[in-house]
Length: 94
Image (cartoon, rainbow, N blue to C red; front, side):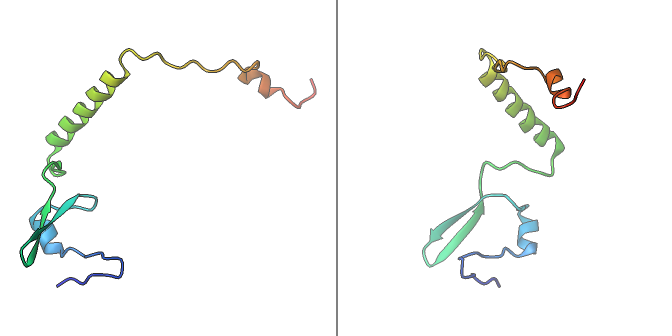
C-alpha cells in the first residue's frame, strides 16, 4: 500500500519495481482506466541490465552527434592580444 504525499508523489513498492525492471530515473505512464489507474513503464526505455543494448544506444548517440557536427566549422579562439605565456611573468619583476 502506498500513500500520496502533499506533493502528489507516490512511492513504488520495491517488489513491483524489481518485477517490471523499473529503476530510478525511468519514465512511467499514468493512464485512467475506468475506476482504476493503469501505471506502465514507458515503451521506449532501454534495458539497463543488457550491456550490449547500452553499448548499441551509446554508438547510436555517438553517430547522431557526428552527423550533427559534420560540416560545421570549429570555432577558433578569439584573438585577445596576449598569450598564456604572457601571464606567467605578469606582476613579477624581471
